[in-house]
Image (cartoon, rainbow, N blue to C red; front, side, top):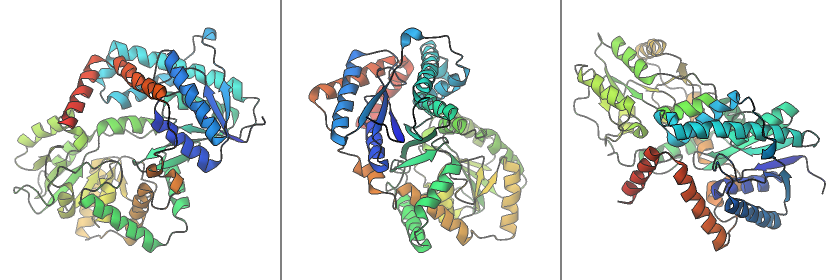
Length: 464
């Protein structure tokens, strides 16, 4: 059968969430050719498992029949394994495992280091065999689930070497699918293009209305994007010892900064160091500094260091721990200025019509025109100037923040790209579903002991 001009690369994974994103993409973009590797080995499974192959092939056959797709196997021969130069993939693989384990120390575990090197070798093999396969094909576009993953990264490099456009995609903000052409999936430059394209025909008043709805949901702890980090906070609650003149910093989850930031070549900002610098700048002034620690950082190193610093600050520094019930939005509303290290708090601060400042980079920084700095000293100079001149947040800035909020919610995206419509693309036999369960158990057993214990503890507390 003659191939079309576009194809989708199918991961060999029993994870049906990814399969759902693939099918949504196939339907939306009218893709007929599915490229796949006839192996169960991937970042999700480091050893060949016959039952996974059976499960994957049954799913693919079912989906090909249901959606009239062409299944095209990319041959990969492990017997032709070469000692590839894998340096470029070591960082990609390390980053993948960091996104899973979320702790630098675990990456030094011998078991994990072995997994990283194995995955780097596998990725280089996939790039090599995919390039050989695609070089005499006539594809103009290849769709790939999240090319931050080593397998997807390998296929995107094959595309680049052959001059084929690649479009990478993933679920964004736990709401809707997002696509990025010839860039990482979270590329700020691509977000600028996609937001402009999706909202080009929407009236500004409708976008502003959606921005207000987004903010209202945030203030009332309702899901609107990502997850509700403030659900345990008490609305309006702030500490009594807080002065009327304070600047508020909202930290970002450092593990996310690292694995997203490296993928996007963002400069890594040492949040603790910048907070100490601002505290020193405020030493002879009447202002207090409040630091609201991200809930994901509760009990982690940054929080512990900040709490120790608070003890010797003579009430100049107020640390709000990640698990605290104090209301993030109450701080945001009452502060002289709000500083973010990349989290969505900058968006919410602007929607509250508060002067907002970004240290470093963020995926939204090409969409909203926020005050942006690489260090806290320059940032504070701007804050002092804005306070002195009583600068207000411009209507243009609020509109841009509303555009970002509207894109996050998927209000105007195609229905087939919204998560709520992914639920029942396919159903499988009990045997295949049992294989899915077996896969999850197998994968759990590949984790280092420390991570296994942390996962079991997390499940226990979620249940009770």
